[in-house]
Image (cartoon, rainbow, N blue to C red):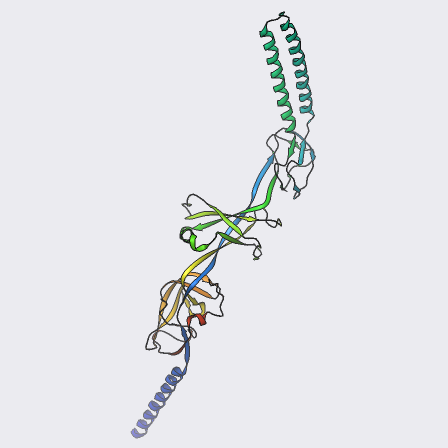
Length: 360
């Protein structure tokens, strides 16, 4: 009986050894691919949410009180500089102007009569000076009356597009009441906020950037045909957000953009000697990214990396690995730390050759 048990134990041990040996042979038979970070010059687009504003957008308000007698335009209409838009009932101001013009005529006659008397030395020169002063005052009053009458006509100060008209024909309009807004959409401003590190990158890369042109991604995820130019940067950072505001100017020949739209400004940032790896060579644990480093003996170990920028299918590495390191390219889900593997090495540029990358 003991002899049988011993034989059974030996058989089990042999069986276990054989299975283990077959597993090791199977593991050793798997061949992985590896590569190194590609070091090259490239660029990437940073996206910034932007608020789009007309180059000129003003409120048109009534300068006189009265009834809205005429509305000559409609909402959304394009108007020309000087075009008549609204008329506020002008009868009272017309009457006032006629009255003041009559006063001018009376004062003019008085000046002429006084001058004739002064020439004959019937009245003193002071009387003539007094009559001329009265004429000047009458003319000034007439000019004021003409100005008030002109205020009853609201005209476009520049070419633009009419916004909503809140009042209807016949409404009683108070002085200063909003009639509409006028937008000049021939060119547009895009305002966007940039963080302090990105601002420093932008300023330091002035020479490498070549120009300050930016693109605009519209709300429907289509890119606008025309490129814009970064014109100004605010003078100080927002203490609460740590951001600073940029302003880019975009041409708008087709009037596609309107005041108040939103979009994303795409700013191209150049990178010299950037370390690029395929995204598939990484894995993530608790929002941290890792790669598997391969030692000279084929043993692998995980290494945390920090990503500077994300490109389509690729990562730009900020720190964690160097251009001389070998990393596992495929099969990262099949291995674990301290595994010993065999691999085929793929040249760095070949590893990213079919991936989306903008090189310079």
